[in-house]
Structures are given as structure tokens and as C-alpha cells.
Amino acid sequence: MFLSQIRTETGARAVVARQGEAAHLVPGVTSVIDLAQAAIAAGHSLAAEVAARGPGAPVDLAAALAEGRVLLPVDHADPAHLHLTGTGLTHLGSAATRDAMHAKADPDQMTDSMKMFRMGLEGGKPAAGHVGAQPEWFYKGNGHAAIAPGAPLVSPGFARDAGEEPEIAGIYLIGPDGTPFRLGFALGNEFSDHVTERGNYLWLAHSKLRPASYGPELLLGDLPTHVEGRSRIWRGGAVIWEKPFLSGEANMSHTLSNLEHHHFKYDLFRQPGDVHVHFFGTATLSFADGVTTAPGDEFEIEAPGFGLPLRNPLVLAPGETAALAVKAL
Image (cartoon, rainbow, N blue to C red):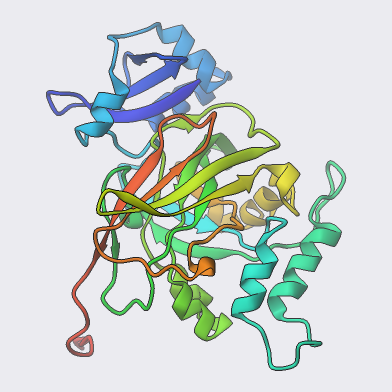
């Protein structure tokens, strides 16, 4: 089952459930968070909560997406309570690209990226109930940086690059007692600045402070162990770059449970009512193939089993003209 959020033709918010080709409104709720809170209170799954409410009016989800009426599949009424985070060097092919960006003068000296990757290979898949190696972790922003499917990803004027990262994102709601509940998974574009990152690996934190998009649909249930999708860049109506990307635990050096533990082990991230969107990483970047994106390009990410494709155009904000002034009070 898939869930999504839309604006109806009258402008009202609504939740849509889809199984196969049939999509319908979910009665009685205007957000997936409301639906999830009801499921938590009832002690059953999101799918069971949808079934208990019965089908509402049918929805043409593809038409809603084409008309710009599809919202993020999960959002928060207060954007400050939605957290965008991620882990890197988690996929079996991810080390080569990162290692090349951060290579040191001595080829026999292992980069920090390669050290981190090897930690995952050696300890990222612990036995059930055990804690494994700690992954790389980064912060992207809050709900103000979460961009709806179809809406533009705006690269700041000071950015050195504007590159896509096709990923799977896990989406979570923190329950009333601080328990993290995984709502499901969505396609994600963990948009980043790879030129800034390449300049110095300590600038990784700066390079990740960019908007990100996920959706259009939320896949309920477990993540398939093998995910194979396609990442494309469109320019002027033609595809200028395309490549498959892999995800799922069969293609990762960490288990999802290990990545989730090392995120939610912090009390800060178990505050009741908060939403977390966590990007699990990728090994596929157009940047690694020498592609330089341009304003007007459109990113497209799709994968069988994840619903409608995620598309976002690229917009470049005006460049810096002067240093930002801070006023003293």
C-alpha cells in the first residue's frame, strides 16, 4: 500500500491511499501524521487504520501530480519539528566516489572516507539485538528545507555545485512515549553541493545544508532487500545523463536497524510528535561522471515498487552581493 498527501481540486488537504491502480481518499484525516497518530493510539498498523476507515472518493493521483497538487507524503504542521538527516558511505559502491573526492597525496594512505567505509563493511551488520559500527551522519535541515515533488530545488547563490543524490528515505514519527515509529519509505533526492565537499571533507556539513525532496508516495511495510532504480537529468526535453542506482540491505554495508539505532540513540531525536526523514545513502552521482547541472535541468528518480517517480527542477538563487550583516540589540 502507498500513502500520499494532496490538495484536492477545491484546495483542501487530503490523504490518499493506493493499492495497485486504485487510489482513494482516506476519510476523516487531512495528514498522514493524523492517520499515524490514530494508528498508534489504536495499537495497529497504518494499513489497518486505512482499512478501518474504508475507501473515500476515487483519486487520479497521476493527474494531481501533473497539476502540482501532490504534497510531500509526510510533513509537519510546524516545519521546525521535521528533521532532515542522513547517513553516507552506507552502500557497497559508495566508497570509490567519495574516496576519489577526498584522495590524499599519498596513494598508500587510506582516506578517512575509506576508513569509515571499511568500518561499515566490518561491523555495519551486527547480529539482531546488537549494536554495530557507527556510520557517517549528517544534518540537512528542518521542514523548511523539505521540498514537495514537482517543486523546484533551489541552490543558494554561494553554492559551488547543485547535484542530485538518488536515495531511499525512511520516514518516522516519534510516539507519545518517545518510541520511534517507522511510517514507511519514499524515493528521495538528497540534493548536495559536491564541489564544496570535495574542497575539504570538513566542509561536508556545509555541502549538505541544501533542500531535499522525497515522495511522491510513501511505501508502507518493509524495504525490499534489493532496490534498483534509475536516476536521470533532463535538459531541454532530452535526457543528458542516466544511470541505475541500487539500495536495500543486499546492496548496503549497514543494516537499516543499525542506521536507525545510531540516529535514534540520541534523546534529542526521540521527542514526541517530531517527524524524521532519514536518507540512507547512495553510490550513484552524476557529479562522479563529470556532469555539471544547470538551472532549468530536471532531476528524475524512479524505482519499481515505489510508486510515481520523483521529479524536481533545478533553480539557482541569486549570487551573493555582500556579506550578511548581523544586527546587535
